[in-house]
Length: 128
Image (cartoon, rainbow, N blue to C red; front, side):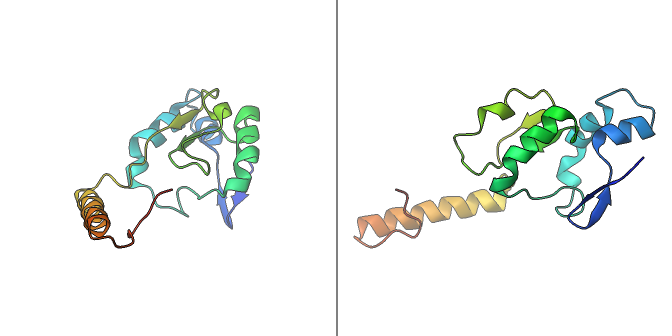
């Protein structure tokens, strides 16, 4: 079994893990989904630049990549509809902002923007 070389790391696809463990197809993908909160970027999963999305879709279609759990897209909210057609892809909302501390900071930022607007000042985070 040949490892896949990505980001200077040898790794196995989820399909290869199923084969290695003589597990039914999709087992490693389901396990991955259950433990993703414990994974480390750059070690357990990799950031994918926007210009690589087309290649990702093709690899997911052809089996070059067994499956993917995705939560950030380069052109949100207009996610490429081809992702929705793939049964080996899980699309989820951003979970990184789901902590109490992050949500509190987001609320504080909203209050700062409202105060700045009412005072006639520039907003900290203007939106077009």
